[in-house]
Length: 318
Length: 138
Image (cartoon, rainbow over all chains, first blue to last red; front, side, top):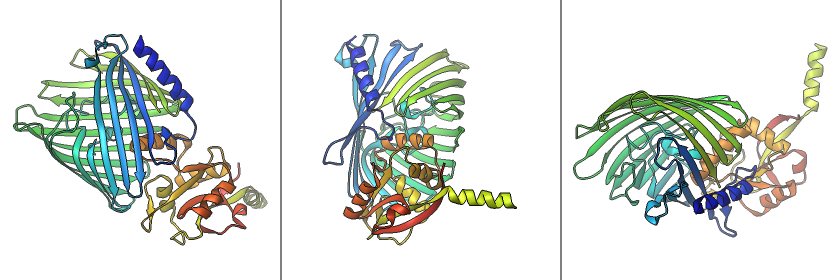
Protein backbone atom coordinates (compact mmCIF):
# COMPACT_ATOMS: atom_id res chain seq x y z
CA UNK A 1 0.00 0.00 0.00
CA UNK A 2 2.84 2.34 0.95
CA UNK A 3 4.50 1.70 -2.39
CA UNK A 4 1.29 2.36 -4.28
CA UNK A 5 0.88 5.73 -2.56
CA UNK A 6 4.47 6.68 -3.43
CA UNK A 7 3.84 5.55 -6.98
CA UNK A 8 0.78 7.75 -7.43
CA UNK A 9 2.50 10.77 -5.87
CA UNK A 10 5.43 10.40 -8.27
CA UNK A 11 3.10 9.81 -11.21
CA UNK A 12 0.95 12.83 -10.40
CA UNK A 13 3.95 15.11 -10.04
CA UNK A 14 5.44 13.90 -13.32
CA UNK A 15 2.19 14.57 -15.16
CA UNK A 16 2.26 18.10 -13.78
CA UNK A 17 5.86 18.37 -14.94
CA UNK A 18 5.08 17.35 -18.49
CA UNK A 19 5.29 20.24 -20.89
CA UNK A 20 5.57 20.70 -24.60
CA UNK A 21 9.14 21.89 -24.77
CA UNK A 22 10.89 18.55 -24.55
CA UNK A 23 12.57 19.62 -21.33
CA UNK A 24 12.83 17.12 -18.56
CA UNK A 25 14.06 17.27 -15.02
CA UNK A 26 14.67 20.27 -12.85
CA UNK A 27 17.47 22.72 -13.54
CA UNK A 28 19.13 23.75 -10.29
CA UNK A 29 19.14 27.58 -10.35
CA UNK A 30 22.47 29.25 -11.14
CA UNK A 31 24.10 25.98 -12.07
CA UNK A 32 24.26 23.62 -15.00
CA UNK A 33 22.97 20.74 -12.86
CA UNK A 34 19.79 19.03 -13.99
CA UNK A 35 18.00 16.48 -11.82
CA UNK A 36 15.33 14.21 -13.23
CA UNK A 37 14.56 10.56 -13.52
CA UNK A 38 12.27 7.89 -14.77
CA UNK A 39 10.09 5.12 -13.48
CA UNK A 40 8.36 2.15 -14.93
CA UNK A 41 5.81 -0.18 -13.53
CA UNK A 42 5.08 -3.49 -15.21
CA UNK A 43 2.48 -6.19 -15.00
CA UNK A 44 3.82 -9.55 -16.12
CA UNK A 45 1.57 -12.60 -15.91
CA UNK A 46 4.45 -15.05 -15.52
CA UNK A 47 6.33 -13.29 -12.76
CA UNK A 48 5.90 -14.07 -9.09
CA UNK A 49 5.49 -10.37 -8.30
CA UNK A 50 3.02 -9.57 -11.04
CA UNK A 51 2.94 -5.84 -10.32
CA UNK A 52 6.43 -4.47 -10.03
CA UNK A 53 8.19 -1.14 -10.05
CA UNK A 54 10.80 -2.37 -12.47
CA UNK A 55 12.84 0.78 -12.16
CA UNK A 56 12.72 4.05 -10.32
CA UNK A 57 15.80 6.04 -11.15
CA UNK A 58 17.26 9.44 -10.53
CA UNK A 59 19.24 11.02 -13.35
CA UNK A 60 21.58 13.91 -12.73
CA UNK A 61 23.64 15.63 -15.34
CA UNK A 62 25.79 18.71 -15.59
CA UNK A 63 28.14 20.24 -18.07
CA UNK A 64 30.72 22.94 -17.71
CA UNK A 65 32.83 24.03 -20.66
CA UNK A 66 34.27 20.82 -22.07
CA UNK A 67 33.36 18.62 -19.12
CA UNK A 68 30.10 16.74 -18.74
CA UNK A 69 28.87 14.57 -15.93
CA UNK A 70 26.06 12.03 -15.89
CA UNK A 71 24.74 9.86 -13.08
CA UNK A 72 21.92 7.34 -12.94
CA UNK A 73 21.02 5.69 -9.66
CA UNK A 74 18.32 3.09 -9.84
CA UNK A 75 15.99 1.61 -7.28
CA UNK A 76 14.80 -1.68 -8.77
CA UNK A 77 12.27 -4.39 -8.17
CA UNK A 78 9.88 -2.85 -5.70
CA UNK A 79 6.80 -5.03 -5.61
CA UNK A 80 3.41 -3.37 -5.77
CA UNK A 81 1.80 -6.51 -4.37
CA UNK A 82 3.27 -5.66 -0.98
CA UNK A 83 5.76 -8.53 -1.13
CA UNK A 84 8.86 -6.33 -0.90
CA UNK A 85 8.39 -5.27 2.69
CA UNK A 86 11.93 -6.04 3.61
CA UNK A 87 14.53 -3.47 2.65
CA UNK A 88 16.73 -6.33 1.40
CA UNK A 89 14.27 -6.91 -1.47
CA UNK A 90 14.94 -3.46 -2.83
CA UNK A 91 17.89 -3.16 -5.11
CA UNK A 92 19.82 0.14 -5.21
CA UNK A 93 22.31 0.29 -8.03
CA UNK A 94 24.60 2.75 -9.78
CA UNK A 95 23.63 2.28 -13.40
CA UNK A 96 25.84 5.04 -14.75
CA UNK A 97 28.41 7.37 -13.21
CA UNK A 98 30.44 8.96 -15.93
CA UNK A 99 32.65 11.96 -16.42
CA UNK A 100 33.24 13.09 -20.00
CA UNK A 101 35.59 15.53 -21.66
CA UNK A 102 35.15 16.87 -25.21
CA UNK A 103 38.61 16.93 -26.76
CA UNK A 104 36.98 18.62 -29.75
CA UNK A 105 33.63 18.47 -31.58
CA UNK A 106 34.84 15.23 -33.13
CA UNK A 107 36.47 13.53 -30.14
CA UNK A 108 35.05 12.73 -26.74
CA UNK A 109 36.45 10.67 -23.91
CA UNK A 110 34.62 9.42 -20.83
CA UNK A 111 35.53 7.60 -17.63
CA UNK A 112 33.41 5.73 -15.15
CA UNK A 113 30.50 3.34 -15.51
CA UNK A 114 28.51 3.79 -18.70
CA UNK A 115 26.23 1.88 -21.05
CA UNK A 116 28.42 -0.13 -23.41
CA UNK A 117 28.34 1.41 -26.88
CA UNK A 118 27.09 -1.84 -28.43
CA UNK A 119 23.93 -2.37 -30.47
CA UNK A 120 20.78 -0.29 -30.79
CA UNK A 121 18.96 -1.32 -27.60
CA UNK A 122 21.82 -0.53 -25.30
CA UNK A 123 21.88 3.16 -26.28
CA UNK A 124 18.52 3.78 -24.64
CA UNK A 125 17.87 0.74 -22.46
CA UNK A 126 14.91 2.01 -20.44
CA UNK A 127 11.27 1.25 -21.10
CA UNK A 128 10.10 4.81 -21.74
CA UNK A 129 12.55 5.12 -24.63
CA UNK A 130 11.68 1.80 -26.24
CA UNK A 131 8.74 0.72 -28.35
CA UNK A 132 8.19 -2.43 -26.27
CA UNK A 133 8.39 -3.35 -22.58
CA UNK A 134 10.31 -6.58 -23.10
CA UNK A 135 13.70 -6.68 -24.79
CA UNK A 136 15.18 -9.12 -27.31
CA UNK A 137 17.13 -12.05 -25.87
CA UNK A 138 20.50 -10.65 -26.98
CA UNK A 139 20.16 -7.69 -24.62
CA UNK A 140 21.96 -8.62 -21.42
CA UNK A 141 23.03 -12.05 -22.70
CA UNK A 142 25.55 -11.46 -25.49
CA UNK A 143 27.60 -8.49 -24.31
CA UNK A 144 27.99 -6.51 -21.06
CA UNK A 145 25.28 -3.87 -20.82
CA UNK A 146 27.59 -1.65 -18.79
CA UNK A 147 31.31 -1.05 -18.72
CA UNK A 148 33.37 0.45 -15.89
CA UNK A 149 36.32 1.91 -17.72
CA UNK A 150 37.14 4.29 -20.56
CA UNK A 151 35.23 5.09 -23.74
CA UNK A 152 36.79 7.06 -26.58
CA UNK A 153 34.42 8.33 -29.26
CA UNK A 154 35.55 9.71 -32.63
CA UNK A 155 33.38 11.32 -35.31
CA UNK A 156 34.89 10.72 -38.75
CA UNK A 157 32.41 13.12 -40.36
CA UNK A 158 28.72 14.06 -39.94
CA UNK A 159 27.61 10.54 -40.87
CA UNK A 160 30.22 8.15 -39.47
CA UNK A 161 31.71 7.57 -36.06
CA UNK A 162 33.41 4.86 -34.08
CA UNK A 163 34.17 4.16 -30.42
CA UNK A 164 36.71 2.20 -28.44
CA UNK A 165 35.86 0.71 -25.04
CA UNK A 166 38.36 -0.50 -22.50
CA UNK A 167 37.90 -1.99 -19.03
CA UNK A 168 40.49 -3.72 -16.85
CA UNK A 169 39.01 -3.61 -13.35
CA UNK A 170 36.00 -4.82 -11.39
CA UNK A 171 32.56 -3.48 -12.15
CA UNK A 172 31.65 -0.45 -10.06
CA UNK A 173 28.09 -1.69 -9.49
CA UNK A 174 27.05 -4.68 -7.45
CA UNK A 175 25.90 -8.00 -8.85
CA UNK A 176 22.63 -8.12 -10.70
CA UNK A 177 21.20 -10.23 -13.49
CA UNK A 178 23.32 -8.82 -16.26
CA UNK A 179 26.78 -9.88 -17.41
CA UNK A 180 29.32 -8.28 -15.09
CA UNK A 181 32.85 -8.20 -16.25
CA UNK A 182 36.39 -7.58 -15.05
CA UNK A 183 37.77 -6.99 -18.53
CA UNK A 184 36.12 -5.65 -21.64
CA UNK A 185 37.49 -4.42 -24.96
CA UNK A 186 35.24 -3.35 -27.81
CA UNK A 187 35.17 -1.50 -31.10
CA UNK A 188 31.91 -0.12 -32.43
CA UNK A 189 31.09 1.71 -35.66
CA UNK A 190 27.96 3.75 -36.34
CA UNK A 191 26.87 5.22 -39.67
CA UNK A 192 23.82 7.23 -40.65
CA UNK A 193 22.34 8.50 -43.91
CA UNK A 194 19.13 10.48 -43.39
CA UNK A 195 16.53 8.01 -42.01
CA UNK A 196 18.76 4.96 -42.37
CA UNK A 197 21.52 3.98 -39.93
CA UNK A 198 23.68 0.95 -39.30
CA UNK A 199 25.88 -0.39 -36.51
CA UNK A 200 28.70 -2.85 -36.31
CA UNK A 201 30.48 -3.95 -33.14
CA UNK A 202 32.75 -6.60 -31.80
CA UNK A 203 34.46 -7.13 -28.49
CA UNK A 204 35.84 -9.47 -25.89
CA UNK A 205 35.05 -9.66 -22.21
CA UNK A 206 36.08 -11.68 -19.19
CA UNK A 207 33.64 -12.34 -16.35
CA UNK A 208 36.16 -13.99 -14.02
CA UNK A 209 39.55 -15.71 -14.30
CA UNK A 210 38.10 -18.64 -16.20
CA UNK A 211 35.37 -17.39 -18.46
CA UNK A 212 36.10 -15.38 -21.59
CA UNK A 213 33.75 -14.54 -24.43
CA UNK A 214 33.89 -12.80 -27.79
CA UNK A 215 30.91 -11.25 -29.53
CA UNK A 216 30.18 -9.76 -32.91
CA UNK A 217 27.06 -7.84 -33.89
CA UNK A 218 25.56 -6.02 -36.88
CA UNK A 219 22.37 -4.00 -37.07
CA UNK A 220 20.46 -1.50 -39.12
CA UNK A 221 17.51 0.80 -38.56
CA UNK A 222 15.17 2.73 -40.79
CA UNK A 223 13.48 5.42 -38.70
CA UNK A 224 10.85 7.01 -40.92
CA UNK A 225 7.91 9.27 -40.29
CA UNK A 226 5.22 6.57 -40.52
CA UNK A 227 7.11 3.48 -39.51
CA UNK A 228 10.48 2.25 -38.31
CA UNK A 229 12.23 -1.02 -38.97
CA UNK A 230 15.07 -2.36 -36.87
CA UNK A 231 17.12 -5.49 -37.41
CA UNK A 232 20.06 -6.86 -35.40
CA UNK A 233 22.11 -10.03 -35.33
CA UNK A 234 24.67 -11.07 -32.71
CA UNK A 235 26.89 -14.09 -32.22
CA UNK A 236 29.05 -15.07 -29.26
CA UNK A 237 31.87 -17.54 -28.68
CA UNK A 238 33.28 -18.56 -25.30
CA UNK A 239 36.14 -20.68 -24.00
CA UNK A 240 33.52 -22.95 -22.34
CA UNK A 241 30.91 -25.10 -24.03
CA UNK A 242 28.20 -22.53 -23.44
CA UNK A 243 28.50 -20.35 -26.49
CA UNK A 244 25.59 -18.56 -28.09
CA UNK A 245 25.75 -19.15 -31.85
CA UNK A 246 23.19 -16.50 -32.84
CA UNK A 247 20.47 -14.17 -31.71
CA UNK A 248 18.64 -11.91 -34.12
CA UNK A 249 15.42 -10.00 -34.43
CA UNK A 250 13.41 -7.90 -36.85
CA UNK A 251 11.14 -5.30 -35.32
CA UNK A 252 8.77 -2.95 -37.05
CA UNK A 253 6.89 -0.11 -35.42
CA UNK A 254 4.01 1.52 -37.24
CA UNK A 255 3.18 5.04 -36.02
CA UNK A 256 -0.47 4.77 -37.03
CA UNK A 257 -1.76 7.75 -35.03
CA UNK A 258 -0.12 10.80 -33.52
CA UNK A 259 0.38 9.19 -30.10
CA UNK A 260 -0.12 5.53 -30.90
CA UNK A 261 2.16 2.81 -32.25
CA UNK A 262 1.72 -0.82 -33.21
CA UNK A 263 4.78 -3.08 -32.93
CA UNK A 264 5.62 -6.51 -34.30
CA UNK A 265 8.84 -8.36 -33.55
CA UNK A 266 10.17 -11.67 -34.70
CA UNK A 267 13.15 -13.09 -32.87
CA UNK A 268 15.24 -16.22 -33.15
CA UNK A 269 18.12 -17.36 -30.96
CA UNK A 270 20.18 -20.30 -29.89
CA UNK A 271 21.78 -20.21 -26.46
CA UNK A 272 23.90 -23.20 -25.41
CA UNK A 273 24.28 -21.84 -21.88
CA UNK A 274 20.50 -22.02 -21.43
CA UNK A 275 20.28 -24.99 -23.82
CA UNK A 276 17.52 -23.29 -25.74
CA UNK A 277 16.85 -22.77 -29.42
CA UNK A 278 13.62 -20.97 -30.08
CA UNK A 279 11.63 -18.29 -31.85
CA UNK A 280 9.77 -15.48 -30.16
CA UNK A 281 6.88 -13.53 -31.70
CA UNK A 282 5.68 -10.25 -30.25
CA UNK A 283 2.67 -8.12 -31.01
CA UNK A 284 2.43 -4.84 -29.12
CA UNK A 285 0.71 -1.52 -28.78
CA UNK A 286 2.03 1.72 -27.27
CA UNK A 287 0.18 4.89 -26.35
CA UNK A 288 2.00 8.10 -25.41
CA UNK A 289 -0.56 10.57 -23.97
CA UNK A 290 2.20 13.15 -23.36
CA UNK A 291 5.89 13.46 -24.24
CA UNK A 292 6.99 11.83 -21.04
CA UNK A 293 4.47 9.03 -20.46
CA UNK A 294 4.10 5.70 -22.25
CA UNK A 295 1.49 3.00 -21.72
CA UNK A 296 2.26 -0.29 -23.45
CA UNK A 297 0.78 -3.72 -23.82
CA UNK A 298 2.19 -6.71 -25.67
CA UNK A 299 1.66 -10.40 -26.16
CA UNK A 300 4.75 -12.60 -26.42
CA UNK A 301 4.70 -16.07 -27.88
CA UNK A 302 7.68 -18.42 -27.28
CA UNK A 303 8.06 -21.48 -29.48
CA UNK A 304 9.83 -23.53 -26.75
CA UNK A 305 9.89 -21.99 -23.28
CA UNK A 306 6.63 -21.79 -21.30
CA UNK A 307 6.70 -18.00 -21.29
CA UNK A 308 3.74 -17.10 -23.51
CA UNK A 309 2.17 -14.14 -21.83
CA UNK A 310 0.80 -10.60 -21.78
CA UNK A 311 3.01 -7.83 -20.41
CA UNK A 312 1.81 -4.30 -19.66
CA UNK A 313 3.78 -1.28 -18.54
CA UNK A 314 3.42 2.32 -17.56
CA UNK A 315 6.59 4.37 -17.80
CA UNK A 316 7.34 7.99 -17.10
CA UNK A 317 10.32 10.24 -17.76
CA UNK A 318 10.50 13.22 -15.42
CA UNK B 1 0.69 30.28 -68.17
CA UNK B 2 -1.23 32.99 -66.37
CA UNK B 3 -2.26 30.43 -63.75
CA UNK B 4 1.35 29.45 -63.10
CA UNK B 5 2.32 33.11 -62.82
CA UNK B 6 -0.47 33.76 -60.32
CA UNK B 7 0.54 30.67 -58.34
CA UNK B 8 4.16 31.82 -58.19
CA UNK B 9 3.05 35.33 -57.23
CA UNK B 10 0.81 34.06 -54.46
CA UNK B 11 3.63 31.82 -53.16
CA UNK B 12 5.88 34.88 -53.07
CA UNK B 13 3.22 36.93 -51.30
CA UNK B 14 2.69 34.26 -48.69
CA UNK B 15 6.32 33.45 -48.02
CA UNK B 16 8.91 34.98 -45.74
CA UNK B 17 12.61 34.56 -45.24
CA UNK B 18 13.99 32.92 -42.13
CA UNK B 19 17.48 33.95 -41.09
CA UNK B 20 19.74 31.89 -38.89
CA UNK B 21 21.64 34.56 -37.01
CA UNK B 22 24.63 34.75 -34.73
CA UNK B 23 25.86 37.53 -32.52
CA UNK B 24 27.89 40.25 -34.23
CA UNK B 25 31.19 38.59 -33.21
CA UNK B 26 30.15 35.06 -34.18
CA UNK B 27 33.38 33.35 -35.33
CA UNK B 28 32.00 32.13 -38.69
CA UNK B 29 30.79 34.21 -41.65
CA UNK B 30 28.21 31.60 -42.62
CA UNK B 31 27.24 28.02 -41.86
CA UNK B 32 26.07 25.09 -43.94
CA UNK B 33 22.63 23.58 -43.30
CA UNK B 34 24.36 20.50 -41.83
CA UNK B 35 26.27 22.69 -39.36
CA UNK B 36 23.09 24.55 -38.33
CA UNK B 37 21.31 21.22 -37.85
CA UNK B 38 24.18 19.82 -35.77
CA UNK B 39 24.26 22.90 -33.53
CA UNK B 40 20.50 22.88 -32.87
CA UNK B 41 20.48 19.13 -32.15
CA UNK B 42 23.35 19.45 -29.64
CA UNK B 43 25.73 17.47 -31.85
CA UNK B 44 28.08 20.39 -32.40
CA UNK B 45 28.67 22.31 -29.21
CA UNK B 46 31.81 24.38 -29.78
CA UNK B 47 33.03 26.88 -32.27
CA UNK B 48 36.61 28.10 -32.10
CA UNK B 49 36.98 26.39 -28.71
CA UNK B 50 33.97 28.28 -27.29
CA UNK B 51 30.67 26.75 -26.29
CA UNK B 52 27.71 27.99 -28.37
CA UNK B 53 24.55 29.24 -26.68
CA UNK B 54 21.61 28.04 -28.81
CA UNK B 55 18.24 29.79 -28.73
CA UNK B 56 14.90 28.48 -29.95
CA UNK B 57 11.38 29.92 -30.21
CA UNK B 58 8.27 28.60 -28.50
CA UNK B 59 6.61 25.45 -29.88
CA UNK B 60 3.80 27.07 -31.87
CA UNK B 61 5.83 29.97 -33.22
CA UNK B 62 5.55 30.07 -37.08
CA UNK B 63 9.32 30.55 -37.36
CA UNK B 64 9.93 27.43 -35.33
CA UNK B 65 7.60 25.35 -37.47
CA UNK B 66 9.46 26.48 -40.59
CA UNK B 67 12.85 25.96 -38.94
CA UNK B 68 12.02 22.41 -37.89
CA UNK B 69 10.56 21.48 -41.29
CA UNK B 70 13.09 23.08 -43.61
CA UNK B 71 16.33 23.05 -41.66
CA UNK B 72 16.09 20.25 -39.11
CA UNK B 73 13.88 18.28 -41.53
CA UNK B 74 12.08 16.69 -38.61
CA UNK B 75 8.47 16.63 -37.48
CA UNK B 76 7.38 17.55 -33.97
CA UNK B 77 6.95 13.86 -33.20
CA UNK B 78 10.42 12.82 -34.33
CA UNK B 79 11.93 15.73 -32.40
CA UNK B 80 10.10 14.58 -29.29
CA UNK B 81 11.60 11.11 -29.76
CA UNK B 82 15.01 12.59 -30.41
CA UNK B 83 15.06 14.77 -27.28
CA UNK B 84 13.70 12.00 -25.03
CA UNK B 85 16.67 9.83 -25.98
CA UNK B 86 19.07 12.74 -25.95
CA UNK B 87 17.98 13.73 -22.42
CA UNK B 88 18.79 10.23 -21.18
CA UNK B 89 22.26 10.71 -22.65
CA UNK B 90 22.73 14.01 -20.83
CA UNK B 91 21.96 16.37 -23.70
CA UNK B 92 19.68 19.38 -23.48
CA UNK B 93 17.48 21.08 -26.06
CA UNK B 94 18.12 24.75 -26.95
CA UNK B 95 16.90 27.44 -24.59
CA UNK B 96 13.48 28.80 -25.49
CA UNK B 97 12.89 32.55 -25.78
CA UNK B 98 9.40 33.98 -25.51
CA UNK B 99 10.02 37.06 -27.68
CA UNK B 100 12.33 38.51 -30.31
CA UNK B 101 13.50 41.09 -27.78
CA UNK B 102 14.70 38.32 -25.52
CA UNK B 103 16.53 36.67 -28.42
CA UNK B 104 18.39 39.88 -29.25
CA UNK B 105 19.16 40.44 -25.58
CA UNK B 106 20.99 37.12 -25.50
CA UNK B 107 22.66 37.78 -28.86
CA UNK B 108 23.98 41.11 -27.61
CA UNK B 109 25.24 39.86 -24.29
CA UNK B 110 26.58 36.30 -24.69
CA UNK B 111 29.10 35.19 -27.31
CA UNK B 112 28.89 32.99 -29.28
CA UNK B 113 25.08 32.81 -29.48
CA UNK B 114 22.94 31.51 -32.32
CA UNK B 115 19.21 31.76 -33.01
CA UNK B 116 16.83 32.49 -35.86
CA UNK B 117 14.55 35.30 -36.85
CA UNK B 118 12.61 36.78 -39.76
CA UNK B 119 14.21 39.53 -41.86
CA UNK B 120 12.16 42.43 -40.52
CA UNK B 121 13.09 41.81 -36.91
CA UNK B 122 16.80 42.01 -37.68
CA UNK B 123 16.69 45.37 -39.50
CA UNK B 124 18.03 47.50 -36.67
CA UNK B 125 20.08 44.79 -35.00
CA UNK B 126 23.79 44.08 -35.16
CA UNK B 127 23.77 40.40 -36.00
CA UNK B 128 25.56 38.10 -38.40
CA UNK B 129 23.42 36.22 -40.93
CA UNK B 130 24.74 32.67 -41.05
CA UNK B 131 22.13 30.93 -43.19
CA UNK B 132 18.89 31.88 -44.90
CA UNK B 133 15.90 29.92 -46.07
CA UNK B 134 12.50 30.69 -47.61
CA UNK B 135 9.39 29.68 -45.65
CA UNK B 136 5.82 29.42 -46.83
CA UNK B 137 3.31 31.15 -44.58
CA UNK B 138 0.46 28.83 -43.63
